Structures are given as C-alpha cells and as structure tokens.
Amino acid sequence: MPIYLFIVMALSGIRVIELAGLAPVPFCGMILSDFGAKVIRIDRTNTVSSVDVQGRGKLSAALNLKKPEGVAVLKNLCLRSDVLIEPFRKGVMEKLGLGPLELLNENPRLIYARLTGFGQSGSYAKAAGHDINYIAMSGLLSMLGRAHENPYAPLNLLADFAGGGLICTMGIIMALLERTKSGKGQVVDTSMVEGAAYVGSFIWKSQNLGLWNNLRGENLLDSGAPFYETYKTSDGKYLAVGAIEPQFYEELIKGLGLDSTQLPLQMSNSDWPQLKKIFADVIASKTQEEWCKIFDGKDACVTPVLSLDEAASHPHNKERGSFIVDSQGGISPRPAPLLSRTPANPSLNSDPLIGEHTVSILSEFGYSQEDIENLMLSGVIASNKTKSNL
Ligand SMILES: CCCCCCCCCCCC[C@H](C)C(=O)SCCNC(=O)CCNC(=O)[C@H](O)C(C)(C)COP(=O)(O)OP(=O)(O)OC[C@H]1O[C@@H](n2cnc3c(N)ncnc32)[C@H](O)[C@@H]1OP(=O)(O)O
Image 1 (cartoon, protein in one colour):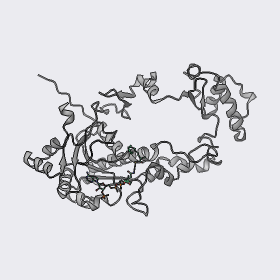
Image 2: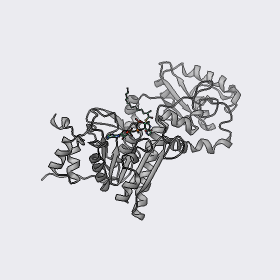
Image 3: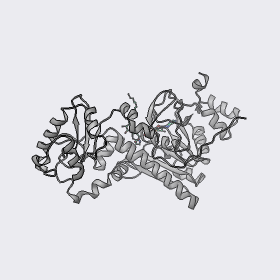
Image 4: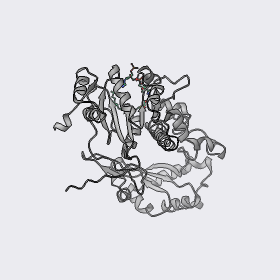
C-alpha cells in the first residue's frame, strides 16, 4: 500500500486567492505558499506567459475579470477562501464590483489584502509608480548613496519586497491570527512607501545619536566610514568590512597587518578618507581567498562579497541548506525563517503555466463540466494543459 506523507506546515489549510501582479504581490503569495497555504493565482485569459518568477507552489486559474461572469467566478472563489491579495491601482477592484465592501459582506472571514505604492488614501493613491518612487517618497532614498553622488536605489529590494511583499504578508498573518479570536476578516492596506519607511524606523529613531550628522555617504553606515565599507581585492573581487566596535576594529587592523598606534583614531571622522585609502591599498595586495584565510575564524567582521552562485556554494550556507535547487536546476533561497516543528516545505516543481489549473480549481469549487465548458467557450476562463501533456 502506498504511503502518503502529508507535511503539516504553519499555514496548511489556508486558502489564498492572489490576483496576478508585478513583483511585490507575487512575493507575498510565494511566502504564503512556501509555508503551506494553497495559493491560487488568478491570471488574465489573454496572456500567454507569466512574468511571475515567484510562482513557486502556486496554482494558476485564468479568468477574465472584464466579464461579469468572470467577476462572479472570483466572488465564488473568495466565498470559500481565507485571503485575497490584490495588486492594482486604487479603485480598480471597486470598479470591477470586487471591492472589500462586497467581498467582506459575502464572506466576513475574508482577509482582504491590498498592496499598493501609496496606500488606499491620500492624493497620490491613484498614481502609477515603482519601487524607486516609493522609497523616494519614504525619505529613505535620500540617505542612500555614496558621497557627492546622486541617491542610489538598492535594486527593488526596499519597497517591493521588504516594505511591500513582506509587510503585506505580516499583515495577513496578523489578521489570520486575530481572526482566530474574533472570527472576522479585515482589510490590510499596505502602502510600500509606509512599509519601506517602517522597515527604516531605525534611521528615524537614531537621528539624535549623531549617526547621520554628515552629508550622504560620509557617515558611519552609509559608506563614509573606512571600517564599514567594501574593498577591492587583487583578483578583482571584493571584501565587506563591518568592524564597528573597538575590539572588532582592532582585529581588523591586526589582520590587515597594520599598527593602530600608527593610524588615525578609528572615530576621527575627518581622517576617514585617509584611513580608507590605507585600507584600500592594503586590501588590494591580496586575493579575496587569501584575505578569507586570514579573517575566517577571527572576530574582525570581514567577509567575502559573494556572487549569487558563490553564496549558494559557500560552506556555511551549504551546511545550513540555505539554498534549494528546484526540479529545473534553478537555485533559490530556502524560505526563511526556519520553524523548528513546522518548517516551510517549498515546492520544487516548475512554476505554473497561465491557466494550468483553471479546470481543476473550478471543479473543486463545485462547477460542473458543462459549466466549465460554457465559461471556456464564452472566453470567461482559459485553460493551459501544455505542461501536463508534455
Ligand atoms: C519590456 C518589458 C518587460 C517586462 C518584464 C517584467 C520584469 C519584471 C520587472 C519587475 C519590476 C518591478 C518594479 C520595479 C516594481 O516596482 S513593481 C511595483 C509596481 N507598483 C505596484 O504594484 C503598486 C500597485 N499597482 C499599481 O500602482 C498599478 O497596478 C501599476 C503597477 C502602476 C500598473 O498600472 P496599470 O497597468 O495601469 O494597472 P492598474 O491600474 O492596476 O489596472 C489593472 C487593469 O487590469 C485589469 N485586470 C486585472 N486582472 C485582470 C484579469 N484577470 N482579467 C481582465 N482584466 C484584468 C483591471 O481590471 C485593470 O483594468 P482597468 O481598470 O485599467 O481597465
């Protein structure tokens, strides 16, 4: 007799409807899926391939929301789901008749999560934008960048993912937890401007510590300080140095073969450019590997700057299994954090094709074969079986 293993994860039993969007909402859905939720991504019927590279573990149903029957299908799915995540500009869902008033009225337990750049109110609420605009509006972008250069956006990590996808996930989890007491759902209004700002709370709350008294790029943590910087090694790679505390700084100086009595004081701000030059010249004299041999096992807060491939194969990360390899050979980070009893068990299968599960999902929600065929014929839904036929 076959043995079926059912792995219980933290979010097992939670059903999520994710309306397909760009980067932040897919990340939110992927986290929920990694930790056990059943995530159904609603794709458009007129698109062939998905730009969602974070579709891990999700199912896809292709539904035309411009048709009233499509809206009715979505309402039906939401009736028996726990969470809806929507990525559209303010007002789009209401225009479709799928606003929170309608959906929460029909399913008062629904967590209705909205993830936008500027939030659901305020004069920018309907404005188009991307990560760089949101971090600009959060105040944080003004702090990022090297001295005498323009502000620099650190990829689209801060607003899309930290302040957006992750904060929205946190809101959903909190709402699910609260629902166990009240029995009621609620609306989660995630603004990426606010989410990014919140992630940056330390920056606001450390204003009186003297950490940010200088211009951008001339402070302790913004590439001003020589002991919190990256340096090029002789083989064209880089080292990251983060030796802030005096005891770690002393280890750094020793490892570099320097004598601290011959150097300016660590916290002498005006000497930082000179000290940086000294460190840069010394570090440029050896390869990254040679420096790693010197600093590994020392409390000097020195690490190699690894490429994505190198990160996955670094012994420490390998020991922890920090990266996973999917069935296509793709490498990606293992879901974090690690839960001791019910860890995430991410799918290793390839991401869903658009409409790959339309038929099975509709059947599961009680639609007959005939209903499904009619919806298909009238262009309300679309199905893609390419993968299963391969
Ligand atoms: C050459 C290009 C290649 C592209 C490759 C892509 C590579 C990925 C790159 C990722 C880059 C990520 C960047 C850096 C980011 O920052 S992503 C974050 C973007 N911002 C947000 O997500 C904030 C919230 N969303 C928004 O503000 C807006 O959705 C947006 C991003 C500005 C896009 O605006 P816009 O395209 O006008 O869309 P919206 O106003 O939201 O309206 C969506 C329309 O689509 C419709 N729709 C939706 N689903 C369906 C469906 N299943 N069936 C039929 N229709 C559907 C909606 O009804 C709505 O229609 P309508 O109201 O416009 O008539």
